[in-house]
Amino acid sequence: MNTNDVKKRLLNRDRSARAITTDGNFRAAAIINTNAVREAQKRHGTDPAASLLLGRALSAASLLASFLKGEERVSIELMGNGVFKKIFAEAMQVGEVRGYAEINATPERPDEPLGIGLLRVTRVLYGKFEPISGVVALQRANVSSDLAYYLTQSEQIPSAVLLDVDVDESGLVRQSAGVIVQAMPGAPEELIEQVQNTLATMGSVAHFASSGNQVEDILRRIMPSEIEIINKTPIDFFCRCSLERYKSILLTLGLNEIQSMKDANQNELVCHYCNKTFTLSEKDFDELLADLRAQKN
Image (cartoon, rainbow, N blue to C red):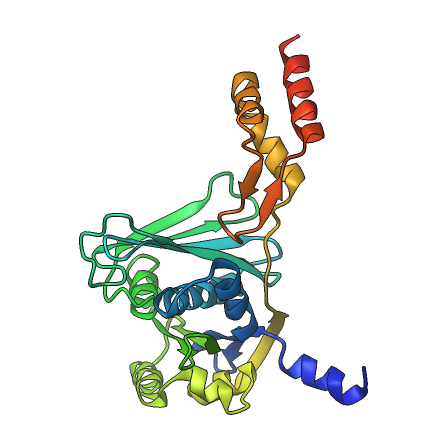
């Protein structure tokens, strides 16, 4: 691979960036994650409507995770009574993100993607024994407005959120990008209004990214004053599922359940988050049964 190819790959790599204004009035995070959203669409075979909501949720989770540390993680769940029962995304500060869309078998509002429902944000943090969660009612069920409402109402942080996923004529993801801007205590009202006006008149942040702009350009376009980039993180659709992890979970089912699975040849396990399939071999079943028998003795 020549130098130009390496540079091109680096430029096309999904990334998030976090910044603050040098006057301390605002903090923000921006993301371009087209590859990750395309990977999610490919793995789950989502249609354009599901790809749009899932892509926005993946962006939102990665943006919130950018404010965390190390392998702390944040999840976003949008649950409704429309076509989709749940849109779920989970991300870590190190750049891993995964998620899925779950269809509602009996939607009460079949003409609406999410309908009436709830948004839940959960953070798993270092030093905290229990996850920290907050829930609000869905506002417009478009992820952007719902997350902004949650951050402003539940966490008391005035926030503006813009999340965009662009799909082509065949329904495939063409571009995905997003930004979160938060006012710090003491930020002048006129500057907050300036940020809001900038976001309202900017148009699609995905289109802005597709013009060759990078995450830093998004931040500079939106922030009302000079900024300092705090960090930049590569983003990947990544799931830590493995056959060994599933075998550990299966051990909690008990001897009779595992024996029944073996007898019925129920040997396929599918990861909810990334749609990867694992197949249990005869040896795997024998090892599980032997472990469970040993635990009983």
